[in-house]
Length: 257
Ligand code: CAA
Image (cartoon, rainbow, N blue to C red):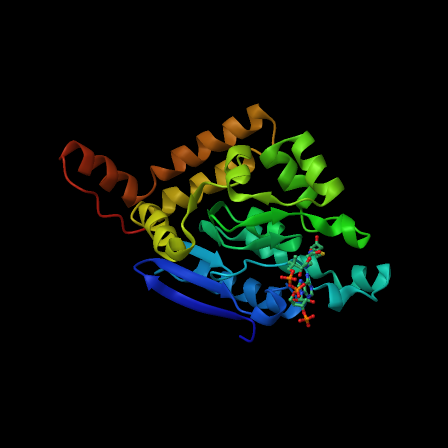
């Protein structure tokens, strides 16, 4: 791994992926995204991992796709390279991914954070889709995920002007889960992740899948999908353990089975 650092067990059941291309503000070149894809695949298959944190470190999350790498590409180059296909792994990952964002999350950086399931941001975070300022537009989900997250008029303003929003604005608009002090980013994100990591990994994955399905289905289809996943949890030992623990007034011990 050249551009990321991976710790599969930063804490019990929690893995950390850190983008590490500091001189270029973690600009997302193709190799970096291939590494993210491969790391996610591996962590998704690792039974010890229940939650994945994706961060860029304390200074910057990511300043977008690598402009220098694509500046002279033709449309057919872009089509053939199909750089966003590596991003599909993020969507396919069954375990929850929490983005921990400090500093700039711009263009592909903002899109990367939005492709994760939840976003913890520090007070220095700035989100933006500035592609319009370099003569193009978002290409990794910005027009779709941002619009679903913050609504049409706000997404239009960000995408058509390229202006950045601050962490408090992102919180107010519903783009992020919470704001934490920059110095405590990892600590607070780990605390947040630990709340999920102690739960049934089977139920967590099925619940994540069901929430995501809300974006791809009608209400009736989504409700049917949800109900089936709810029933499916009853095939797990974790459901038996969770309900028995409630009745016996003790803490459950979930095994992910
Ligand atoms: N691609 C390639 N290199 C980048 C980069 C990017 N997206 N963002 C920053 N860098 C490089 C800079 O070129 C610079 O390198 P050199 O030292 O070799 O010149 C280095 O990182 C530091 O950047 P700055 O000197 O510009 O730092 P700054 O603090 O003055 O400004 C910034 C920070 C406002 C984030 C500015 O770097 C910037 O505007 N970056 C580009 C943001 C952007 O337009 N992102 C969208 C990219 S397109 C995209 O993402 C498409 C998509 O939908 C996937």
